[in-house]
Structures are given as structure tokens and as C-alpha cells.
Length: 275
Image 1 (cartoon, rainbow, N blue to C red):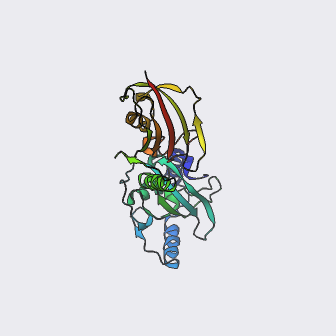
Image 2: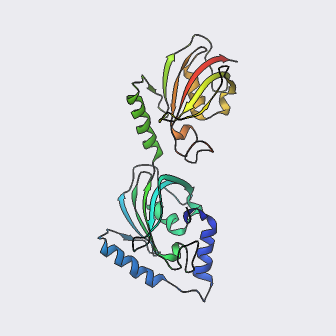
Image 3: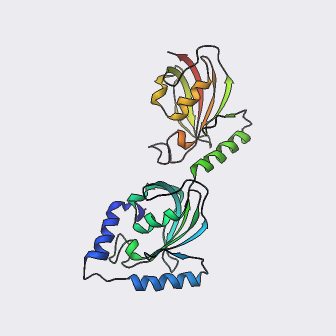
């Protein structure tokens, strides 16, 4: 996005342009009037924080509390008070609150994961009084936000996949689900075992992102994602099945080069040997 992910530089930029330059216009009173007019026009139940920020809570959220140092994932729509779209992200983006504009850093702390609402941000908590990266100086910004709770969303996605594919899956209690097609009859691995596994990894939509050849690969179970460390211990040599792994036990909210943040991953596995 052209705004939120300018990261810490934006915070410093805003501070310098809002507070340190005596020749810089102060938009605070003007922004306050603009925000109050927007609230009235849209019949919003908004709260003022004392810094100039206003926020609306539609759902506070039942997930983890958010602090100033939290990593969070958000779907959002940003606009100006006249309705002109600034930026929109419906897939979700992840970041640490130390890396974003002050209005986001403060405002998101009024929500928990799973919460939704609106942030009405004056320019001194956004991008300052000078034009910046296409955003006019002194702009009030409105963000409609949904704070993603991947624990809940991943669970719903896995349960739906199990039902759609008529799987006999077991929940482990950690968020992992597994399917044993063949338990196997040989040795059973431990959390630090070296094993040889034939596998295929894919998303719930069926898209394959990785797979081994028919000989498999040898790996140490204490050097892989937590879903593998835990899941492979439910099989014995010669066993096969599936691991349905939430993002918290896989590649997290940030993902990697081939796996999106927050993604549920599924692995077909065949445990060839415990080495």
C-alpha cells in the first residue's frame, strides 16, 4: 500500500512536520471540525481519545488483546472524508504496531483480534501537514478495519475442509488436525527424530505449493514447522495420512515467499522410516 507500509519513516516524518517546523500549518482545529462533521453526517457512534483520534467499535473482538508492540493482521479500506478511496486490502496485511502511523498504533489498541470498526485520523496522527506520497497535506483519513483472528478463521477453514472432503480427522488440541489412513507398524518418531517422509503440501483450495519425489526427504523433526513436529509423531514407520495445519503451527501471519500470511496448509504424508 502507498501509506501504511512506509513504516517507521512515516512516524518520524509526521513528527518532524507536525511539531518541529514553526512554519508548518497546524491543521488540528480544522481536522477536528472535519471529523465531527463526518461523524454527524454518517450518524456514527464515535469515541474521542484525547489525542485527536476518533474511533468506532462495531465489534471489539474476542481474540487476543492488542498492545503497542503487537504483531497484527488487518483487512481495511482507507478513504478521505469525501468518500474518495485511498487504499483497500481485502486479503489482509500483517505488521507490527511500532511500524505504522500513530493513528493506527493508538487506534488498533481499542480492539482485540476479531474486532472491527473505524478509525478517524487527523493529519497530525497520519501523514502530516505536507503532501506525502500522493496524500495531500493536512488530510483526515478514515479507515474501516477488521482485525483478523487467524486462530478462529483457520479453525473454521479446516473444519469446513474436513466436512467438504468427508475426512475422518482428529483434533489434537493445539489447533492441528490429522488423518491416519495407515498407522504403520514400525518405529514411532519423537520430537527430535530424523525421519524420511514422502509428502505433498497444498492449500485448502487444492493448489500444490511443494512436494517431494517418490524417495522422500530426510529431516529432523525439531527443525521443521511445529505442525510437522507434532503431527508426524502420530504415525509409525509405514504410516500415511494428512496433516491439516493452522498458520500458528505453520508459516504464521507473515507467511513466506510462496505461502501467504495466515494460510492453512495441508500435507499428505507417508512416513518411510525413522532413521
